[in-house]
Length: 534
Image 1 (tube, one colour):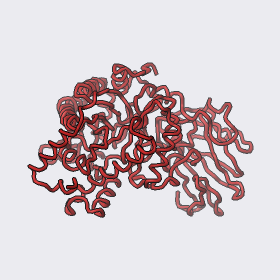
Image 2 (cartoon, one colour; image 1 turned 45 degrees about the vertical axis):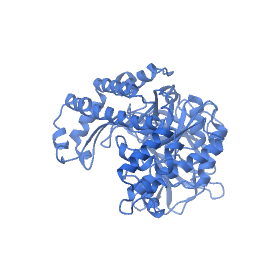
Image 3 (tube, helix red, strand yellow; image 1 turned 60 degrees about the vertical axis):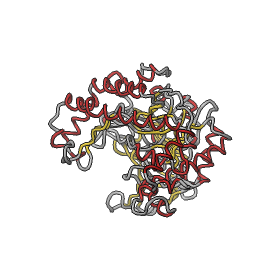
Image 4 (tube, helix red, strand yellow; image 1 turned 135 degrees about the horizontal axis):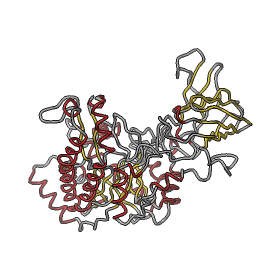
């Protein structure tokens, strides 16, 4: 009998299924608690500044026509890498870079290098101070905010391409063409030295990704990584430098050819001492994401689960496609020794783990780790529903009251979810890992528009006591038998949409960043080669 049929069986038969799991599963693996991190995604507003070439984070080209509203120019002619091949009369293309406030990126002289024939102009915080073919020096005053690079002219026979905008102090010895040999900012490398794993969910633009075929992927020749995500070659290079295991999220639309080519490049280029965490997409349980709705559609199309509950069929499709992807990686790598095959589901939702996802077509037998995101949840809508929190109430809290809630209400709930999920993982002989985790203080459903509450949450995230709560949280993860814990996220500016970054800007003082300090001190206590002096 197929597991898809078992989903509709009476409780007694499901109990028999669970007993068969226990008989077939091996002993639970010995946990090895370590810290990893999710890296903030490529965008012109990225405040982590991982690359010395800031054009890598530039926004995709914006078309402009003289006399028309901003951004209302004609569709641009682009080559396969995203470079503008020609411009119509009275038209230009531009892109913002370093849209970061309050001087939180380097001022000084940036070196702009390019190939081809054309004319570049600059505005905002940048102005050109010298020009020669293929090279412009610009002076940037970051106190004025971000700046724009404008393409005013380009020759269709030899169009402007391979633009690089190099931070002050990094232009010496650059090759005449293509990109620099040392792409990563040394402060970025030093900050995350010793991480056990780097999860590339946001670097790959996983949520809502439109990539399906290998030919669609970003490459080192891509004009900017903000369009499709960071090239696999660069992710592998980073992990090799940092001696950190990569965690890759396969796009939900990816075909088998994409998965196979991706796995082959990882096998060929990744250092053989490193393992690869493999996950199908991200949060396929979460209905706010396109990949979840896609899974529902595929489940219905394939006749999985009850038609009246398409979300169940979506969970089954997620399990099936995950196992298919794992199988391709196993074929390419010639086995499972270097792979950690991840099934991820909503923290605390053990009913779905036990009855919908893991048993479907014996997905658990092809899995190494059960992943959750055991956040310290404080999600606040404008008005309460029943006994829940409301923004009207929370906005009146002090910082200490907000932290009291996190420690006395959210922390115990998170610990309970961790423990309950660990039971499921133990039953099946799987590791328990966290694909994301940390504080989750944010307005939702309109609550995010309460500026007073947002300011309160920001203040709570900056308070020294937040670090103490993180220490209790991480120790509870360790005591419960958790393995890898991937913090969400690295460095990112706080806003009404959340205070996810453990620091807000690349130049923040680590000693004044309680979340960062607590995480790194815990990692060091776990034996990781962490450098606390940043």
